[in-house]
Image (cartoon, rainbow, N blue to C red; front, top):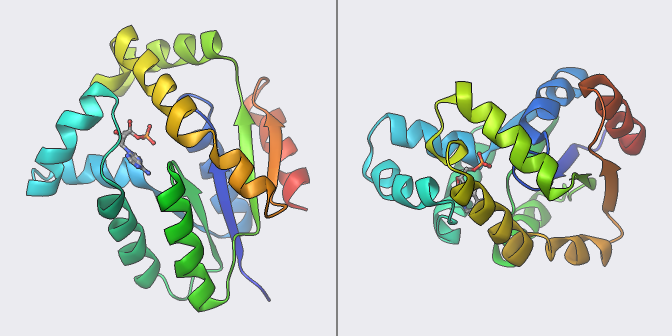
Length: 190
Ligand code: AMP
């Protein structure tokens, strides 16, 4: 059976992490979140983590080769996986191309790119709400949140065209209850 490789796409606060949890259970997939991997490095105070933290706290992107290397390692460590959910990756065209190359070698291409669509004011509201409990520096300050959304629009949103040209882009309404949105994603995967 061919593997299910899903790019869960969308701006910060769109619900990628929450929805990933449901999808990995339902389809028995491995969750690859570059944000989570970077935060683990930061917590462990590795050299990479210390360098990345400054960028993350400002809402700027970490260098492509760093996140590509992390994804490559995790994919190699999970060769028997039934598939992957890529959450927060790719965020640039170079990352998307590197991902396609890695998957091409294995002949396990991306199945679909599911894009959670949520308007900016709702994103800001959600992220400020999350900041009260998440302990994430980048969720606390509205200026940082807006910088993350600008970065998304400038560097990341253009990937919709990249995946459209491959016939893989599917827009998903990201407003509603968690269960309603999971339902929309499952229908889009089927
Ligand atoms: P996230 O948890 O996906 O919201 O990511 C938190 C922060 O980690 C981002 O604002 C970036 O600074 C960094 N980051 C996560 N994923 C990537 C990526 N694919 N490329 C570059 N930076 C990333």
